[in-house]
Length: 297
Image 1 (tube, one colour):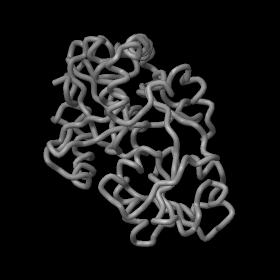
Image 2 (tube, helix red, strand yellow):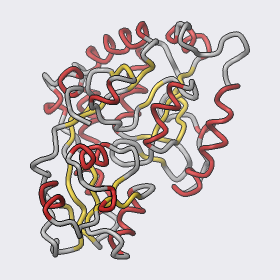
Image 3 (cartoon, one colour):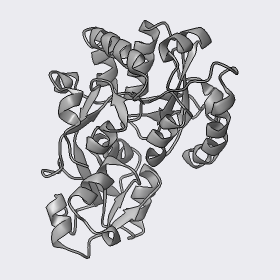
């Protein structure tokens, strides 16, 4: 089972829209997955419990290359693949993925619907105040997806602030929404979309002038959709990165995870995973969660 996140918590063969619909059912059922008397809560030993029951429940997204739902319902992607490898080193043989929107990831974690988040949930001050992040697995940049030729010349957040007519698509609860809010881009200029595909559709339908998303996410979308182009790195967007996120009470698990993650980063397998998904393992070297958690938002 370690080769793929468990299929028990995702709908086999379903598309992204169906996966979103099934999330409510999966999340509701999570409270009863663990036997009575052994529920994961703030006072439990998550590491001991996960070893005993043989699995860890993880909140994920469907945003390649960070996370990806395959046609058969299995989940892969850079962050889940790293998390599976580290969990195996901890003696946890199965990782069960639960699809959820970004704005629900931390609330669901705090409500014990899952035990961790591994979904490209970028570190920033507000999130770091609510969860314990592992050390970074990836460091990422931001770009705009724009119509071919970038007719409105949108290259920076400053361009959005300078023209109140511009409409920028963002994922609710996403890091990019936080960047716009921190820059005081009015809500009227923000077009909320459900996922990557919805953002590109908003561009095509002229409901948005640009789609703000991580550079690699936009490039992954562009592999199957040639209706838009991806700008260079947005110069006034902060450098960011992500790792697994845990409840603030799961300090023992967090410490053990970081220890094994540090060891795993020294293996060829870590670089292989990042290379597979288009990330640069060297970009993570020397970058700490403490540094990334200083990002405003």
